[in-house]
Image (cartoon, rainbow, N blue to C red):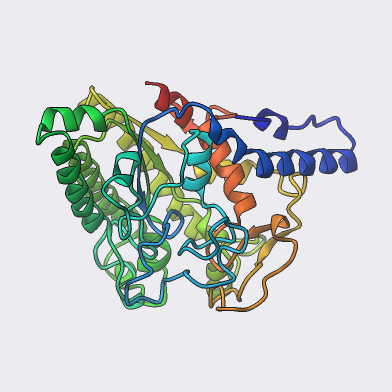
Length: 373
């Protein structure tokens, strides 16, 4: 990745110089990631599953409170407000840039027949592993439905291959698949305003239930032809402005530590699941992207982030309020709104997912290595 190794500045560098250098590096990242998309693509196609952290517009036509197709969302995105829950690019958009893909991946809701050969984004704001997650927010495309939508795409691709299923499967085996889901199951289903699951299950029981269902979903995706799969772990959702405002920070912390503990419990089980899947499905490769550890290891001040506990748009509980004016210094904010990272944060997360800088960033391999297989 261009300039990524420079992020890890020397600990012996004077603090002010270190901040300036890191900010310079961040500016280089933000300005040059788009430029790198002019080389040879590392994969022919990219398929995306997940929630609002990856949604590219699938919720736009739904009757849902989880929508972002209005300004100031997309204020820094080339096409403006598209339904992305961000001021600019999401983590999967930056990943597409790093893979040197020509275009961002279109949402399933609007993807044309020709576009699907480059990939499709099935992610949906407020989606979860479990069907009941975030039901009070209205319509959303849960993981099970995303798999059904991919089956529709698979039928289309098979038709384009002369109804040759073997050819379709061979085509998909070269594509990258990323899945980032589970945050809403924990932060909304278990710890949200209607936390019904917390009455029925302990955190240990519920994360085990999530991983069991997620395992079944991933095996279905494998049956549909996926062979290169990167699974984004749950981030430090206990640090999001929404959950801190709702529950209050834990004593001596700026985050809700017990929610982060549950996220880690999920992530630990997810990493073990990756090992199991790699052992069982030997003609595929699964990898785990440790977003939680990447986030916790960042020297945010040195990277130019000045606001780590407030939102650039909206309030801590409402999300981005339509047609309001967001903060001007968006690259200095970790969070765009009450629950979603800014583009500047997504650049860092995606960069280390693509090119691991420490052994804990990805297990067993990073996305760049996965794409080369």
